Image 1 (cartoon, rainbow, N blue to C red):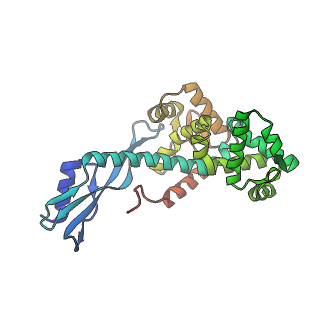
Image 2 (image 1 turned 90 degrees about the vertical axis):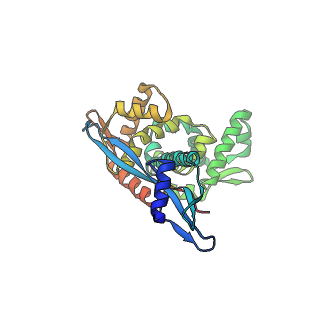
Length: 306
């Protein structure tokens, strides 16, 4: 039996049909054959306009583990089935996070136009408004707030400083280089605020979610992701009813009121992050094209090689 047949037989016997193997490579120094485990993981995707049709697509997952054979083609070492399954699960989670990053990066301008997003990021709006009107926020003005409020304002100032939107000076804070550049590129105050919020969401979404605990914004991203992630897997626009999106949200993120999700879908349609026709929601063609481009540019779903 050839080395290829041997590793394939071992993989099927120990890991099941979802796991396959790369081409074995011989290490002349150690006199061993080494092959990496991989999976073309199946995803079944539907379109509500054709409820009886199911699309079968595959996620390409790499470096799930390895099998090492000796010169006599006997197994010497292999990743355990448990670890292989754990790696498979973690890569599926990685894909979910990557899809959300793509969606946030492409859709940040649209998220920034949602009234609720502007409300939860009101501190950013307050800082921007002050700098537009008087070019400086004095240290004494920051310190005059209640300690809890002062701490929150300082955290937002540091967040904006990291984006070069504000700059710390002896007297307090003033505008940064990016603030000046974005102000020059926009015609009105409201449009400028939207552009700044978009920049914050696009570049610091993880920080807003993990450090600032802004769950409202996260829910908007999750609802948007419930539609766009399967569309990215299918690599084509899908047409889904609100019920399909509510059900998918429950499976991925836990149950949330259908009234809340329907409201969020309406807000996403209002800002053109999604489109709606009759009872079907579908993607913004321009945004989806950009998402596909980003997906193709990103590396394969696998950890970096040691």
